Length: 405
Image 1 (cartoon, helix red, strand yellow):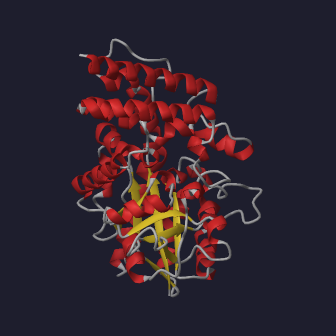
Image 2: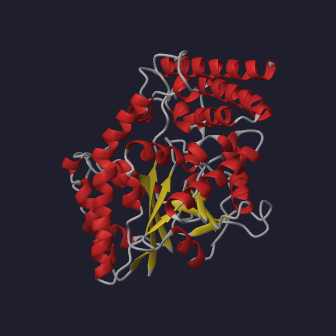
Image 3: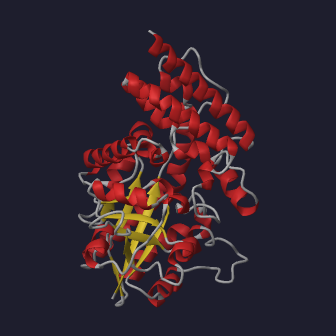
């Protein structure tokens, strides 16, 4: 019997004020971040995706529980999403807490979905992993035992830190440039020169995930329309030990609208899978404990992996001169923030480290360009760079002024 992990990324960033710094704001957060814009985005996605998708999953989970079945799903929920849900739509947290016992497992990640793993000083990355774990414990009563770094960004160093921080496993992209002829449908581990015991590496099956995430509503796709029954047959036909599906939760109702049938697909899929004799749902931690590694996944420093774009590396966030300049400025400012050790300054700096700001100003071409444009609220990468840098420079001046006092 083959195992299946079904994981959802749930995230909303704190968006910056597109019209510039609000100098008369009462707090630093209001000085830089647009609460009205954030609320509007959050409310729209809640109505299109978060509420209907979660209700569909909950209904399926309850029905299957009555039949003696136990579906398992994994949620990677960012702390910035949790913060905004508590502010704008607290019923979403109540819904996630109302699933039958042992249905949902929460996956660890960095605080505010940040780029902290690329900072020269790794203690901040470690601290953010711990902060997110604490928030998950407080909101959902679970301590994550499996993690994913922001946007599935991964290399051996990240894997080593995951191991040292006590995580049993870490998700990343099953890219063929590292796997070669091998299948992503197995558990792997870090090279032994990185960790003595090794943390399990779970690899996303890109093709099967993207069949839902990108191709579901494409009428020119040869497999259109995709039904839960057809998709389940594909899962059954896969080789290996465990198939890992990891997708953006907004796939369901936001990226693919309700009229495409995507919400019906989401509700029906767990029912179809539960009826298969050769497939079984597993949480991420169950997959780690039930399937021993079959080999090493060696992602060295200059071969970093992610789930983004054709390159599947870090260039979606750090590929252009504009992105690198912003990240360097953030890192330099962060050293000053650390010296002051003030809660408000640290919180703002961490929100500025959120990956979305850099993703919005990528200068990719062709289909990758359309993906970045879809998620960005800027007119162009150049305009986005100007806005983001204005906020960072102003914040840096605020920090420097405090240091002079």
